[in-house]
Length: 283
Ligand SMILES: NC(=O)c1ccc[n+]([C@@H]2O[C@H](COP(=O)([O-])OP(=O)(O)OC[C@H]3O[C@@H](n4cnc5c(N)ncnc54)[C@H](OP(=O)(O)O)[C@@H]3O)[C@@H](O)[C@H]2O)c1
Image 1: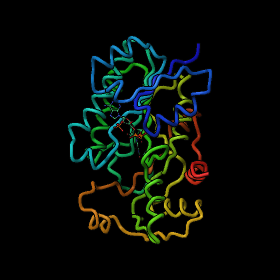
Image 2 (image 1 turned 90 degrees about the vertical axis):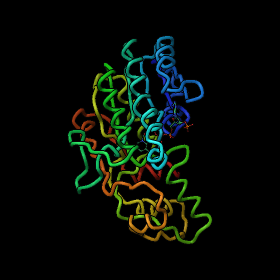
Image 3 (image 1 turned 135 degrees about the vertical axis):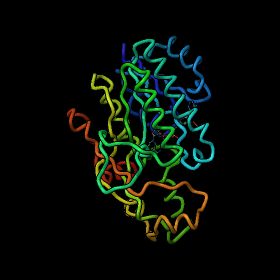
């Protein structure tokens, strides 16, 4: 029998990428759940489900990922991003299941000039970041065999920055994009490969998990348009200018790049460069 792999939030970007990599692979017995069949905020339901299914590993891809939405309703953000993983952690340790939980660059303040490693101090500045950090802490507290992967600027099958830019390019000759926020665009497919690489191991712990290389949102957009052969221009604007145009938006970190130090130390997965990953995605 294959590895019993339970994926929560299976309809999201990362959930879909994991499905596409494992569906035809006999090594895995894939069990996907999303909010309509298993709401991860429901403690009793999560425990009962995991007790019954007894997976070898749970990958928690479920989250409240709308940063502005989390700012408006912090309690809901905490319910999904903190209580949810707590429930999965409790349930996983009851049956000896490995838990792979996904977190974010937003646990950092997003300042400075050096990519943050797993050993740097955190300090979230947004409701989303605070709720995700609380989720990490619950996982460490209640799961026995845990991996936490912090990713950033994720794009896959679903609503994401790449799709938004491509749809803006359909209707506009010029698109305005901030050029003073830097990070690591990461494809859901690359993150899914990294997740699968950890499943058979006992290399538990906290990992930074982003594609290699750093760029601004404006540079990322230029690369997307270049790869698609679009002539749409990218107007570089500052975050201050963006905030003037969209005052309701939550503040975003200026420098949120991560360094995948743990993967390097453990001789683990090596992510593609962000340019190769976006080329694979659009190709
Ligand atoms: N997207 C990014 O740029 C980014 C950056 C850094 C880190 N991350 C992290 O990476 C992980 C995967 O992100 P993603 O972009 O794949 O997320 P996503 O596309 O937003 O998918 C999340 C999934 O979880 C579901 N969900 C929400 N509440 C739930 C609940 N209570 N119980 C069960 N399922 C629930 C969502 O359903 P609904 O759609 O119906 O709500 C959705 O299908 C998350 O942990 C996220 O925090 C993402």
